[in-house]
Length: 159
Image (cartoon, rainbow, N blue to C red; front, side, top):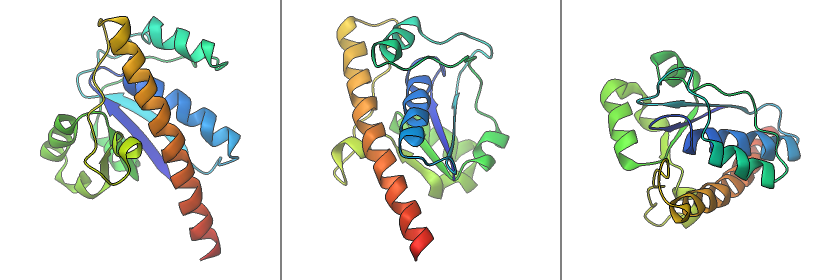
């Protein structure tokens, strides 16, 4: 399974989600799940947000070498599941790649369960509170998503 995280710039939210998800998949021994990220408006080659790199370090995760990349058709076609941070991201992807509609979900869905999912705000350049909120939301969502994907994989394997 190929999982793609998408945000605006691919330096904060999707970068953090990708890094955390890779760590979760490693912990759950799920090497068959590939993880990547991209940004709708990314400046290719931009480095990750230092605040997010520091957050990963606090969690004992070595930040991967990362350069922002802009979302392209090849990413959309590669992905089996596209997790976006905002409803607007989903709309923009569906507008450009209508065939992707069935595989796009809001990452916030994995915080709230099946209730109406919240957008995960963009903390880039914001206050420490904005960063703490986004980090907490993404961390909770990734833990829930990882468990859901591991369960789905087990069911597919045994079913």
